[in-house]
Amino acid sequence: MKTEPAQPNQEVQLGMPQLPAPDYPADVRARLEADAKEVISRYPDSRSALLPLLHLVQSEEGFVSRTGMRFCAEVLELTTAEVTAVATFYSMYRRKPSGEYQVGVCTNTLCAVMGGDAIFEDLKQHLDVGNNETTDDGKVTLEHIECNAACDFAPVVMVNWEFFDNQTPESARQLVDDLRAGRPVEPTRGATLCSFKETSRILAGFPDERPGAVDATGGAGPASLIGLRLAKGEPIPARVVSPRGGPQDRPHHGADGASDEQRSASQHLSSHDAPQRTSDSDPSHPAGPVTEEGE
Image (cartoon, rainbow, N blue to C red; front, side, top):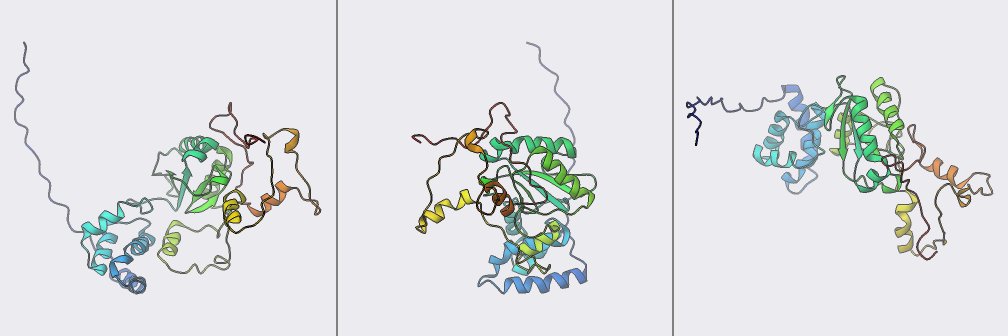
């Protein structure tokens, strides 16, 4: 049997160990220390403040840098290993510079079936980026994310954790184009959109000082609240639903002249709400409400 000649020993190049992370400039450090002191004062055990402090340092650089982790470790008297273990566990903390807008497409089961997979693939091609990658202009970081707890508005896209409901590939493309062009964008529910750094500071526990931001709100949709209404003893009228497009699907108009669909849209409307088409990922098998068994 033929054997391969022995390879000569290759020299192994050993690099220098990574140097300690640099500190923040003195003025930045002083400002962050004042903010950190306020955050830590909210907790009986200082190490419980680690999650909001990671948001705080993320609001400074747009991601959790080695400098940010060093800062958290020093003010909480933890090791950098302890801080790193937490920062790398949660996907909400970015480990590298990212975009001004974090665009997350839900690809969990229901959103995927309703078109989330198609939206995500379309945006990757449209933006020429992959998952967790940022456009060349630094505006948009695209990622697929797990359930957004908004299944009754599927498929859902989130920008800096604000909801954009009932999306299609077309509406999602328009959304990211508007973000990159600096055009105003309004979420379906919640406060007016702000930058990722501003969002991180709010998540650190500091007030949103924008006019009207605190009053802006948006709860779950009617489908999500049925169980709560039943638990409260509220009467839920019986309703038989039929496949979309049939004669039973014609809009019902109330005394005010508005259809049920119009009233629903007025409650959940953003500048980028899409027509509520379903199953863009599988057009040959359209999804929609069906008559329940026995009805």
